[in-house]
Structure formats: structure tokens, C-alpha cells
Image (cartoon, rainbow, N blue to C red; front, side, top):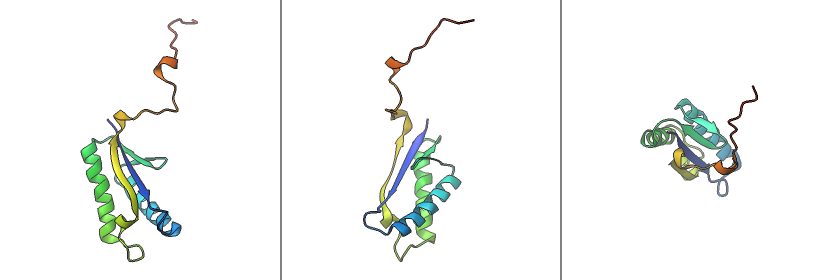
Length: 107
């Protein structure tokens, strides 16, 4: 079982420089918390409840200890949600119908 955590910052309403600084801090802390980064999605093999608790703890810890331009970190978040990877379908891979498995051996 894998869980994904999506964190998108509000680049439309905030400075790109500040958002990049916040993203770098989030990325560092999420990786330290045991997540791995896959593009811009944090993945963990923990169950969803544990993953959500850990991700919230990362952001709340930043909220307590860091302030960016007198604003709180949560004000920079556009999206912050998790989902179970078992329900994810990668549409870039061929469908099961298109994968051919040969049972004949050439040896």
C-alpha cells in the first residue's frame, strides 16, 4: 500500500521567489520525514492515516518555526491532500489488454 501527498503552492497570488523558498523547505522536510519525491508528488509506503499525520506534522512544524514575509506557510498552500496509490492508474502505460506475454521459450 502506498500513499501520495500532493502539495501545490499558490504561485498565482504570491511571489515566485518566496514560493520557491517555501517549496525547497517543504521538500527537504518531507524527505526527512520519510517521503520520496516523484515529480511534485510525495510518496510513502505508510498507510494513508499515518502518511496524512506525518505530512500535516511537517507543515505544522514549519508553521510554528518559520514565517515567510510575516505570513504563515498555510497561506501559501493552494492544494494539500493525500490519496491512496492503489486507486491510481498510470495512463502512460499500456492497458493490460495491450501487453502480450509469450509462454514459448526460445531455448
